[in-house]
Image 1 (spheres, rainbow, N blue to C red):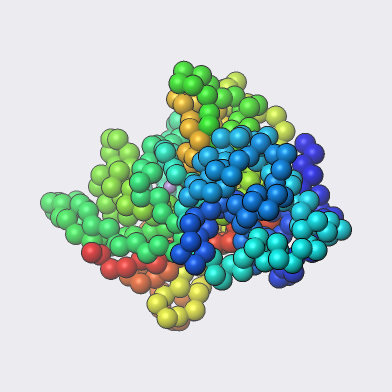
Image 2: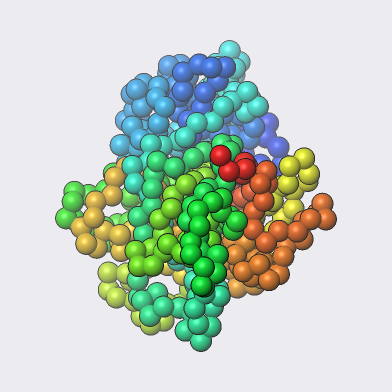
Length: 424
Ligand code: MN
């Protein structure tokens, strides 16, 4: 696939910090608000938001399948109606406008000032209206760790796990943007084997290091999306912290699976990095044994090399890095997840969010949850301020960062950051 905007030799005339996640090869999409003005669609380069409405009004987005309404909006859903072909053309145009050697925009300072907005003065909003949220469970190391802790080390993976990209339907209403605080959830837990359940604040609040993908409009109810077609239905990806209350989860999850332990909050990063921009970072998948059923078979590289990091920042203290993982540690990839999700004819809509499931790597420093990092509370995690954590404490901020890099090109996500307030 030849995507012009991905050319690794491209440089931009915009001054950007070294090691910026937002190189000219990235050009993600989001929704911004400036000085209390109206929300609008935007992209980003270095430490500037690119105001797409201003670009349109000034005539730089002509001969593309977009109207002003696509950018003069508080959600990317409208723009995403143009599908992969449309958004690819738009990103290619942005790449053209901001690359070295292209002076159309560069030489008009009064236009540049309208279009490029210093990120410090920008308020980020939820980039999409999420209709439905589905969460998978696709990291083998994570599923094995959890199975080992809670069931039987000898049979840590349940029999269906190697055959099905296991998932459940989550709740879209509580998906929130990075920067919004959450309250420690209350719920029902069972303190001991022989004790009755109680209701109160969760004591075992945890993060889940995940990535999410956002879909374009899918097919009508009853139709399926093959692994071959799946990438055409994926707009892009975000960092995703899928908050979990382990004590509530343990008591409630049998027989119907996750419920109140999961649906109180899930946080996403504000810029959607397109699947197109991540194309150069694809790598070979893991061997899947037993051989998967035909509808889950795929060809080509479908795994992505994306470095991930989790940090905990206690109130008023410095951050401590507690995990370094990678999106490549997924067993089931996104095209398999989407093919499985639609094999029964379930319809996907534009703006649906699909979570990867907790991304744990093979080593203890790459686990994607406190449950695993502190191994069910038996190995507390040391923080730089001298304190330790088995789970997340009140007033802690959990930060996740992610980026890919190759041949001097870096494409990243920025961060998703959420502070936990005491229970309400
Ligand atoms: Mn999850």
